[in-house]
Structures are given as structure tokens and as C-alpha cells.
Amino acid sequence: MKKIQILGTGCPKCQKLADIARGAAESLGGEYELEKVTDIQKIMSFGVMMTPALVVDGKVRLSGKVPSMDEMKRILSSDGA
Image: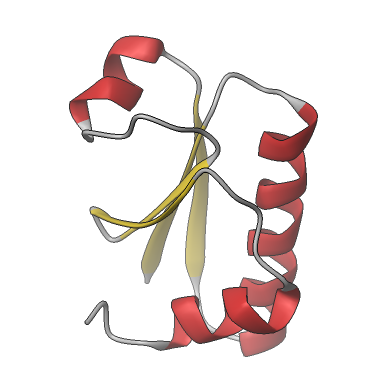
């Protein structure tokens, strides 16, 4: 099961990133857990300077932008390389 974390304070871009991540994960059909991380100290612990950010299985995969659905599917279907 993939662990997907959305790092952000709850702004509209953060919400859009969460929606896209959820939609991409569901369309890929795998099991996943989606968590929104809004605590600024936790966000900083990932070394992220810009939100929203996407963390997949503990690795920061995207920061400071909202990807397209296709780009999100590629991120979630890759092995983290």
C-alpha cells in the first residue's frame, strides 16, 4: 500500500493537489492511504520549503506546484526513483 502525504496548510492549491492525488491513486487501482499534513513543523521536517508538496512512501516527489492528472499517475506508478 502506498502512503501518500499532502504537505500544506490547507490552501486551495493544497486541496487541489489532494484531489488530484486521490483521483490518480483510485484510477491506478492500488491500495493507498492519503494523509494531509498541515502542521508547519512536520512539513519543515521533510525539508520542504514550498507548499503544496507531495510525499510518496516517505520521499518528497513534488514541491511548490500542482501536477496534471497524467503527471500524478506517473509519479504514483513509479517506484520512487
